[in-house]
Image 1 (cartoon, rainbow, N blue to C red):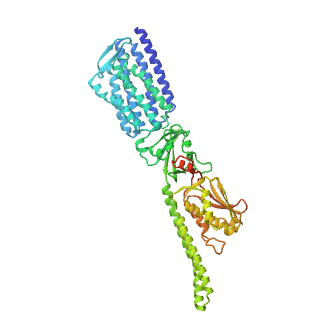
Image 2: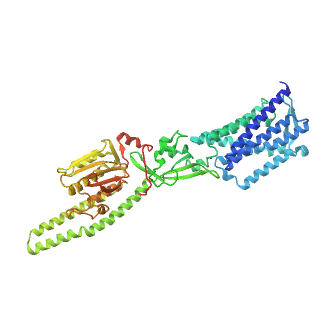
Image 3: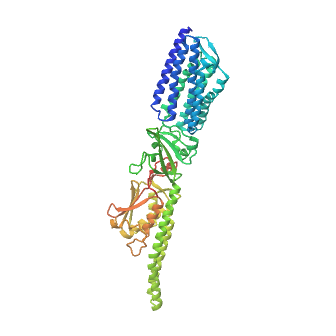
Length: 579
């Protein structure tokens, strides 16, 4: 090939490559809101300078000028591997190594190396001699002195370390971080390929010109990491120490809530996350969409409940903004399973409440029938009137009934650990069969497949107590109806109802309007409800009676749906209340 034609093609190639790298630097500069991004901007911006020097080197009018250009070009190019090395340390979470003292040492080393190169035409300390390479393109390169070779050794470290660190990182990373790291690994491995091609004289151009050609490929990989994988939005920070080693699920999403990364605990807890990079996380874990009626602050709920292995699990969500210096580029979610902690808190609260109520019942409700029994027995002994013994027997029976109800409360009020799918229709009908219902009517307005996760025996006890309460106040011909609510179910009757002023009192331990009752039946209902983590309140029935509404209940459409929830990814119910 004619040397003039070769030089012209080389110059055009240098100009195009320089223009590309300059454009890349300008584009990345818009993301340059952190230390790592600024390093890449400097890295890309150096190559256009090297391109101009490479062009001047090729068209130099004499050998002396070519030697000077070579020395200056080498002084500048020594900065490239140093910038890549510093970027890699920052990217892989080792920025803490870059103290002012360390950066000062790097700066001193570079200034010394660059100073020796730039002053070589005068002092001759960098290169012992220069070799002229003839070919389609004529250029020179210098043979380094022993001093310059020793001082240049860190350059090799700076070239080898980034691919090694990034390669190790790519093998341990998951999700978008692996793809991001792989792109950077490819980008900073290109210089090795170029170096071996140049040493093998397969690229007959000045060394810095060859590296500028390679920089285009490196730039493409870096651009892919920035554009496709949000390189400078979410830079991994000590991932093996902070991310994967956490015992909690960690999920990283971008500003649009698209999944970017997760740790191993996250995919154990929510298997649906695995392999779904780029998908909106609220589609994979619906509870993270929050609840318009909730009191969540920020883009995600502060807590939610999900079914896993057939039982509800409660998770607290800590949301951290992942900002640049000015904007939020994403969110880090730490999802902590607080089921056991909340269960212990609820147990302690319930035990404390029960102890207080038991003490009140023992001091009031048992004292009266006990006094009645003692008084009548004494009168019977004094007068021989046997009817007094019958009254004493009635009082003792009442004491026995109160004791039985208290024992029921102590058992049924314990927090429920083991749950299974229970069909509401089935449990209501079973409770109806075990209750003396006389001429009463039961209407179940539920899908036969609708159910809940609950303790079946205790849930049946709830229905039995409500049925007995309705029969007691509504009469033998009362109609009782069971149906579904938006967030639970209800049991209502068409009896006389409960006055609004009395509705808050009916669940109290000592409240009753029946002289023969213990006042503990509805207290048992409330206690079992709380043990399930639900709530219950009274309102007007459809036909004027009393309606007991159970809320905060996750209704499940059939056993198959219940099974689908055990993986922790199915339909869930957000909650933002402490137990």
